[in-house]
Amino acid sequence: PASTRLLPHGDLAVGRVSLAEVAERFGTPVYVLDEGEVRERCRIYRGAFPDADVLYAAKAFLSRGVARWVREEGLGLDVCSAGELELAVTAGFPPERVVLHGNAKSPRDLEAALRLGVGRIVIDGPSEIARIAAAVAPGERQKVMVRVVPGVSAGGHDKIRTGTDGQKFGLSLTDGSAQHAVARILDQRGLELTGLHCHIGSQITDTEPYLVALRRMVGLMARIRDAHGVTLPELDMGGGHGIAYRPGEPSLDLTSFARRLRAELVDGCATARLIVPRLAVEPGRAVVGPAGIALYRVLAVKNTGGKVFVAVDGGMGDNPRPALYGARYAPRPVGRRSTASLRAVTVVGRHCEAGDVLAADAELPGDIRPGDLLAVPVAGAYHLSMASGYNLVGRPAVVAVHDGTARVLVRRETLDDFRGRDIGE
Ligand code: LLP
Image (cartoon, rainbow, N blue to C red):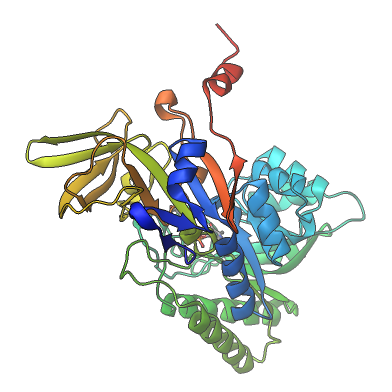
């Protein structure tokens, strides 16, 4: 985080709190979230998109504390399950500022969305149209959008590219299934179609693919107007805004991205003689990613078969991203000053599989040893939200740091939690 400061003895402070002290007080592994940084990133978004809705994508990481911060900073919320929705609402998030996504919404997801009164439900496929319409109370109307696949390929890894046909999300622009769904929704008395949605992928550092997608979405809006005489008032361009995970890596430049997106929208609408719809964006990673640090204790060091392995007390259970997407991180030591020169090591976790590698090519001081602390920066998004229960290691605690104080947001998972759910013999 921007608030990171070097302290004496090789320690780091985040939000004016020493990481070595956090490890001492709360144990490891622990995820440290800089509240000031999350709030600042929300403000940067509000500033870059003054006349758009900014919805935080809860899938990146959600806790009641985070829901409160983003609400207080004026953001809405993108959820994709009843779980995310209800956790946010219990934290005081106004349901009308929430959008529900999902390619396979369960009866419980839809029940919670309608009962709590979410602002928008994004329809991902034709079978949802009748389901939602049937669930809406007589005389009421649920606001919905349609998720469109604009045929644009973008994203940091094949598994997180969602802008082209051939993947499970949304309805194709190319084969006409999006237009067909729009026509059917317009026929439903219980549904109010407020606009179109697309999300072309994740960890995108280039503005160009968004502009291509936006042009196609505006084109579709114009065709809908021509075919049905309806001008849709909203256009949600999804999230996917890329961040740097290691020093020197590119990130999406938000200010220029926002400006170019806006200009393209205004231009495209002028050409199509369309009233400019209200824009929405749904950043997840870019709001919380850089605000989080994973803090591990080194448990073992060994030199074998030509490699030095540094094993820590977490791993793929709390951060599956290297195993899933080949994601790369730059771990660094914390809390002990070393004068040893750097050497290439492989930082691995404690889980029972060889693929449990956190950083295949880390550079750490040659005297790194058990008991040392390792910090993995840019750990705020898609780590704990995708954490697993593998090996019953227990999911780490999340500690918020702010203005010199540290407090637990989510406590560590313990044996009592495992025992509590295990109710049969
Ligand atoms: N909106 C929709 C509809 C989405 O599906 C997503 C992410 C977002 C917004 C937020 O995208 P973001 O701004 O965070 O990139 N687990 C993967 C990322 C999967 C993203 C899924 N959808 C990772 O760790 O890289």
